Length: 363
Image (cartoon, rainbow, N blue to C red; front, side, top):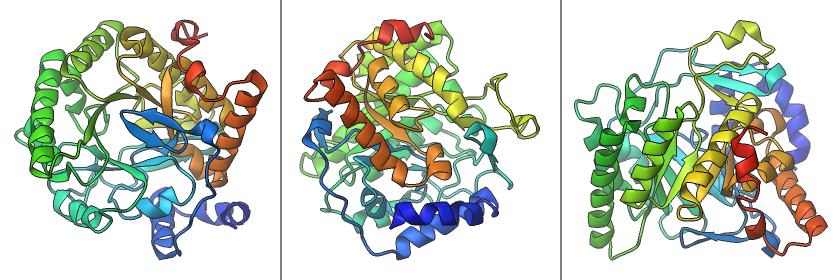
């Protein structure tokens, strides 16, 4: 029913301001009856970070910023969802308009600036779903006006550990001034050290349930910076790396020259090549020691397959939903199964990272 309705709804939604259209979809999901997706084919199941994912297709952070509808989103067929970003204190984010559709490019530019209801309200919402099935994580961000951004991450980890399966330290948003500076080696080491300490304390206090800690990085890192980030992540023992956030770059191939000049992070199809190349470069640096989640330009089964070949055990999408609707989730899963059948694999494991060396060169 949802698949059939989207072609009708899309023109109506796209007449609205993008942020207003998105708010309407969140309200509609909240009001809709719960969905129970069909069981996934066992060939799509994967164990990552000690968690059993029914399929590798996840929802990226930024869609359900305020942690309002995780179970409705899981009901669409995602194997996992990442909520947020959440900041310790409520903040409004940047002035509107702050998100723009580049429809010809299958892209978005956003400069939300981590608009968040804050830790207390998001925690309250997550408390209400305690004990429900489904793999859920939360993306974490620092307050724009914070005097100690490193402490912000520890506060968030301590406040949310035990309520969700994983927490993602996001030091790569381009829309909070100075935040990407925390990807520097010394800063990042302290961010991760304090976040891990906070996680361990909170997990112990909650009876020992282990909350996985992930790190999300930018696609715009130079080679030496990528070396430092991956080495620090390995040394600190993060559970996975999310590659990548949006980009501040503007590829020459963008068709919408008018909107391409808007400030903010670019996501969607134009990010695919860059984010996949960086994903493969990270795979070559960390090998199989740290699982990777591939994000950026996943708009169909071919893109998802390429992310897996580059080194991703899991993939995430968001922007493509704006243009293709929720039917895209089933299309990607069906396409992955078709590829597995053609190649005679019983799971995705043999595919993970097999073309990393090639894709790291941008091939």
